[in-house]
Image 1 (tube, protein in one colour):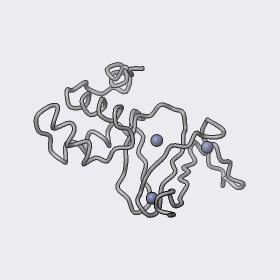
Image 2 (tube, protein in one colour):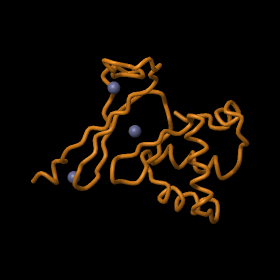
Image 3 (cartoon, helix red, strand yellow):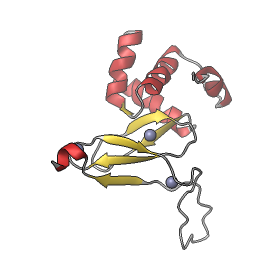
Length: 137
Ligand SMILES: [Zn+2]
Ligand SMILES: [Zn+2]
Ligand SMILES: [Zn+2]
């Protein structure tokens, strides 16, 4: 299922650039990728791209909701294409292996705060932490 990134950029009011499209294609292919891994993959496709340029791209695309950023504590931020499925992540404390866990509820916010202090809550971020099978043995 190919995502029409040109339309998504248009809808977000962003210019369609070769680097943005290359970055999106790589994130789609290798979900949960760090900015540095992404920079290398985009550089392989388009020539070279600076670290600053790749950070600008991922931050812009995250701020308009095209990318989703996951920030496990003590680990670098990872990026994936936002598909709206509201899945969660399972991270190994030891080796940082990451697995995807479908959301039991499926829509945000899937956790209801008992006291919302009057906020209109639109997101609950869940990361499950533990040890993966190879780190346990
Ligand atoms: Zn592990
Ligand atoms: Zn994910
Ligand atoms: Zn959930």
